[in-house]
Image (cartoon, rainbow, N blue to C red; front, side):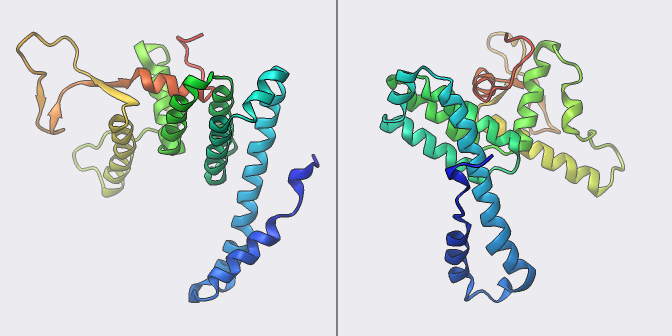
Length: 233
């Protein structure tokens, strides 16, 4: 596909980057080539992919709605935020998710658009692995998909005599899950606790015993990203 987005802005990116690299001793050889040739080109390609996908979504909107969206300062800001995130994306799927969030925001009314930007900010704070973890929790809610976690290679729980690699894998997985908990995208369900009582304390985990599940906010973010859940038609 050839369009105005294919004009070679790479040379300008490379020239600017080389100037900054002049004083860096390690910037020679393969490393210098990576920074000045590969990375700028990749970032440009990501933005081009983002803009093309977004153009398709805008073209599908009603003409008056599309024209109004493209002159609204808040919606233009949303498009720009999406572009910044797309430049840092590491997969086509991530770019598609960003486009979904932006496109839905462009269809929102003016009072809602500023609030929807918060969803864009949430997406920008989680990586692709955390998106996969969140999706697995969403698909497994209420036992709807018992194989939901198979797709994310969730490590087996550490056992007595487990090696350092097993422990490391679990710690890194838990780091992503705890990040989602802190952001409110996952939540703990302590079940039915009698009035005046506290949930049972788990000394090993250092907190109250409870099951982790996706929150309503987490489900909302997945919907905005175009990720379908089995119980939400």
